[in-house]
Amino acid sequence: MPGTIHQLVQTMESIAPTAHAAEWDNTGLLVGDSEWSLDTAVLTIDLTMDVLEEVEEAGADAVIAYHPPIFSGLKRLVADDPVSAVVLRAAASRIALYSPHTALDAAPGGMTDWLAEGVGSGTVSPIEHATELGSHERCKVVTYVPHDAVDAVRSAMGDAGAGTIGDYTHCSTSIENEGTFIGGTGSDPAVGSAGQLERINERRLMMVSSNRGLPAVLAALRAAHPYEEPPMHVIPLVERPMADTGVGRILHLAEPKSTGDAVSSLKSHLGVSTLRVAEGRGGPERHEHVGLCPGAGGSLLDEAAARGCTLFVTGEMRHHDVLSAVDRGITVVLAGHTNTERGYLPHLRDRLSAAMPDCEFTVSTRDRTPWTDA
Image (cartoon, rainbow, N blue to C red; front, side):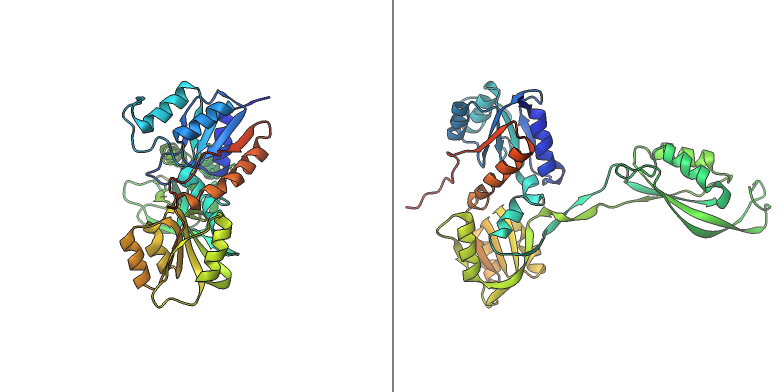
């Protein structure tokens, strides 16, 4: 039984969540209808007209193009524009287009982790960590409740949506607390008398809430709380860095390597015969920390250097950025933009095939770097 484009989108989301793509990127389903059927999909780095003709000849229903075919804000789709012509022709042929791009870079087990494997074994962490915070955890609501009313207030807040964390509801924390107050002349305190300093044993109750649900949560708190003026503190929560997801990677090698050894290993991994190497002035003979980013990763060099990297591997960098790195003792290895990306496609094909066994996934044979050796 054939699959659907919707299933493909779901599977790609499980492999490379688009929420972790760069803000400037254009990822996800770019052309197509989620209800279209899917028997065959072709993987490519760039969707050129040559690749699209290959896709049409194969009768494929979808293309997973690592680089987004729609990227810089197309204002029209016309056949005489080379960029939009490919998109227009795919749409006319009912061929869906999906792009993971930086989402696949950021994901654990994605393109950047694969690139790091080419240098050597060790532990990896993102250069810039992606962050996460569930929509129901945007703020923390704190209140102070007498012991005999804690359960009622917790339940009311939970029923209103507070304390939702993943698949769990009514999550809370409470700790012992001593509260004090002096009621004004017009007050009617639930405990003690107006005009006197009162001390009361309470529980400090804390529950997370979404921003949208906050008004209902506070209304429920107020209705269930025995105090005339319930204490309510709303504390915004910041995004949490993810340990294994984000832009670039820092590889802490299990065994330090010389530049020559790292280059030799990387050439074998990428299937290339040459790499461009700019040796850092006064750098170490052996490298312990390596920064990596597929494609064009020059913007990550400063942070990688600050994290102790003395070797930096990417596809391409600006000339003066390379010179700056060399002056700082950092060795730069450039493999060519798509050479740092294309070798991952067979791994992605295998992951998709395992997740969607009723569909056929192939890697384009016409997708190639535009450069030739002369």
